[in-house]
Image 1 (cartoon, rainbow, N blue to C red):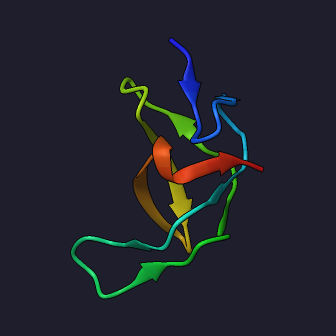
Image 2 (image 1 turned 90 degrees about the vertical axis):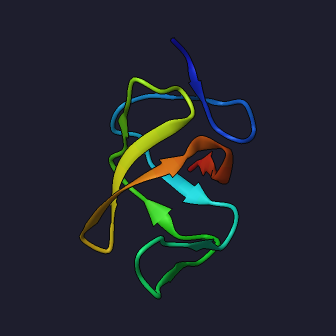
Length: 69
């Protein structure tokens, strides 16, 4: 199973990615800004989602909103 970012680059565990769009976080009033670097991602069973930690908060991001750093 290949997990690809918004540009079509293949992602793997431990990669760093950058957000390409401002994202509102459900359940909070915070917004993740475009250009935010996310380090040490983990792949999930779903090729359209990745697990990560942003600002010490664990969350799941869609691969369509990130690009490989």
